[in-house]
Length: 252
Ligand SMILES: [Zn+2]
Ligand SMILES: [Zn+2]
Image 1 (spheres, rainbow, N blue to C red):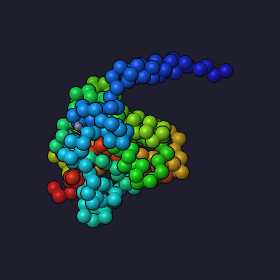
Image 2: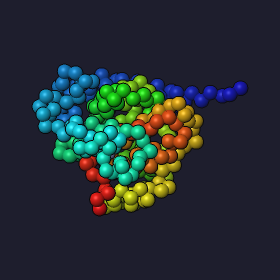
Image 3: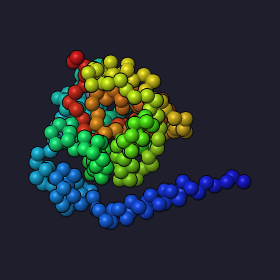
């Protein structure tokens, strides 16, 4: 007879219970994610009217593949470098207060921001009408995650999963830390990425579409690399991040 291991179940129950208590004591889904003021309907707009006026939303004409601001339906970057994913969803532009907030989310341990960010992402996905079946995320190396204590992309994925009511699964493993990518262009980044991520030995389904969650999408090299690892095994691959830089690295 198979012996059931109840320890992980108990651990999860305790964690869920603690989250409920924490949420009752410190509700974070009533305040503007940018300035902390109370907002009337967080799950529609997790920001206040004043912040709405100054926020750099990624709302203009955009590339229908990589979601970066573009006058053409498919930008030059995507024409030159076809992607393994169908479409990206990035509700904000990575600049001004968005940059500071995402840095605080990653480095100052403001984990509660995941909820508001996820509302913005989930709205984009729902508005697009695409079908999502499974959600996954860009991992960190075990060492780095231990140091930080959490993976911000996983936190976001969990919240997006809750809002879209879809399961969140771990598909990728990060094998080694990147060489500093700051000064690399897209092609250098893409080459530097070989062997950085691997795909886990899980069962994939050709009929299921997958959404890959990351925090920021810059050159798309990371999300595209991971999309490439699963795209022959699943239906369509979509990617998303809180914010998009208007940079693709091809000009260098
Ligand atoms: Zn505000
Ligand atoms: Zn594009």
